Length: 247
Length: 258
Image (tube, rainbow over all chains, first blue to last red; front, side, top):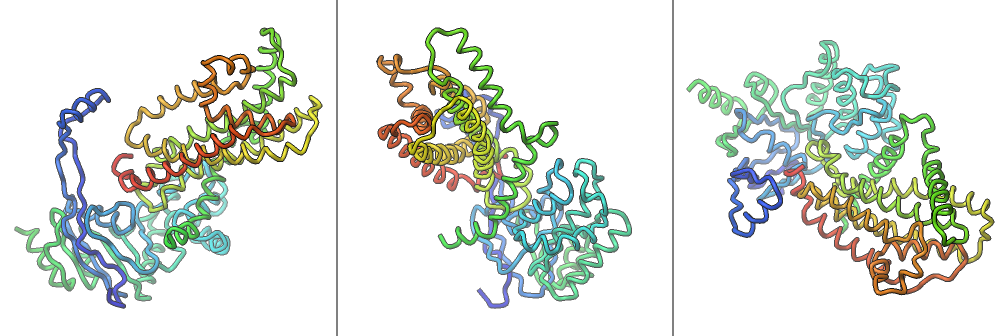
């Protein structure tokens, strides 16, 4: 792998088996299994997807609903394993997807900082050190000691964002531009992401919005039905995508 | 191998956090809170003692201690395996969204149960003193059954958690099996007569019975039954190996089924 490559998606395919007909009971399952009648409809969510990202590049992934964007992100984040091919990454990836997916609603905000932080793989000493900073950025104040079940969804998102962005990632994965919390917090979170951009981190950005990809990314990839149909510099690829949409 | 160790080091704080969460949340909303760890086995012991001392003829010496030994070990085994069984499904929302090593979930379930179990042993100490059970050097042998039951619960936890992802029926099946194990563990009766008959084989084959017997021997100052130990220890190691292999092979499929 090239020294400057931080993310390499190598011939990745993902297959899902969709059951043709519903098998409800164990008996039915057994009979079908013995008669070899268990048929699956194969569905390839991704097919031979390859591209790589060099350090400091900002890559946009374009595609319609169902093109395989989310599946691709899941494979890169390590949640889903590719049926074929592999993904090689270097450095710390921070996926800003599903903020606060590891939260426990009975836990207080403070306890959740440690729980969610641990889930993202941060050590305890680090979280202790950054605790005040996280609380401050989230603007939760005294609510930090209240169980999460009493939080509004905006508050949860703010906390999730504050924890996830406490480290400087090597690769940042974004699913649409984040709109977290109220207008004021949104501004703040956008600024934080912008700051990271300015520092030259590597970004993988998934979006439907051509305008955002044009303004944020220097490279782009178009996914259609699980396959890469075009990749290259952002302007050319965006123009191509625009053309396809107009058709 | 090195990757495995590195990955564990990175996420070991998560294991601590998951164990803490299980313990903290278990009693959070109750008034007496953590005291229930000790109160619950104590009250069960009192009930069982009243029932069995008064309604049945044959008396077992030191019945409260006898019943408590069996009951504590059994309830750890049953709670630990049940929690581990559901651990993957219970955490399905996380498994679908964040990458963490998946073995953390069943492992944390088995460990958090073990910690509450160790704490609840305080009750046994207190009851032992009240009942005037004299400690002997044999008491140190209690480590063997205590270690065996942990290995067995972790191993079975992996097996059950894996199975439960693909067959939801596992939860109910295991509940029934646990009941059988409970009655075959001689928690509140003396199995001597039964063991002499051919039917006694069911009790002997039940690993939990061997573990409980050796634990009782340690408490009552009798030498360890080496045969039982060899059987239960090797069985639990086999379960652990089988569990780890099963889990490792199937874990990438979990996300598609939970």
